[in-house]
Image (cartoon, rainbow, N blue to C red; front, side, top):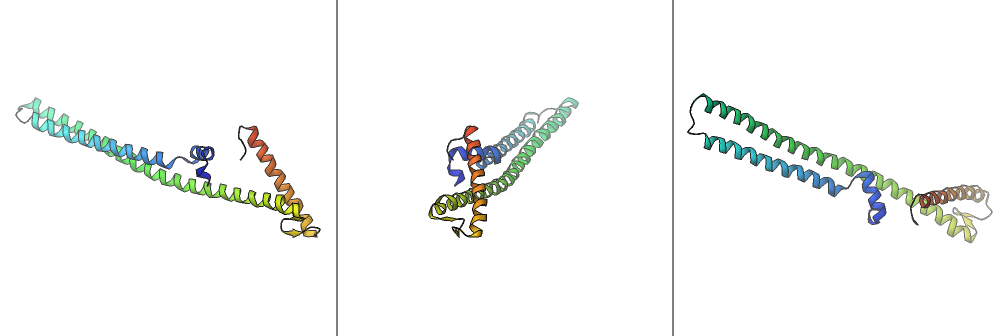
Length: 167
C-alpha cells in the first residue's frame, strides 16, 4: 500500500532507490558496451582492410599501434558490461532493502492502526485494549495504550510541523 501513495512512494524512492531507474541504468551500460564492441570490431576491420597493401616498417608499426588501440576499445566495452552487471546486482540488493523497509513501515502502520482502534473505538464503549472497563488489567493496559496513542499523536504533530499533511 505504501508504494501507491505518491508522497510516500517518492520518499521511499529517495530512501531505497527506484527499481525501474536502476534497471534502466543497467540497460544503458549494456547498450554502451554493445556500441563500443561494435566500434572495436569496425576499427579492427578498417585497419585490416585499409592497410592490406601497405608495406614496410611504418606499415607494420601502424598495424601494431592500431591493434593496441582496438584492444583498448574492446576493454572499454568489457568495463561497460561489468558496470551493467554491477548495477544490476546493486539493484537486487536495493530491492531487498526496499522490501525490508516496506515491510517494517507496513508493520508500524498496522500497529499504529491497532493502537488507535483500541483506544478510539473500544475506549468509547467502556473498553480499552480488549479488557472490560474497570479491570485491573484494563487500567494497566489502558495507561500503556494512552501513552502509546499520545506518542503517536506527537509523531503526527511533528510530521505536520515538518511539512507533512494529514497521514
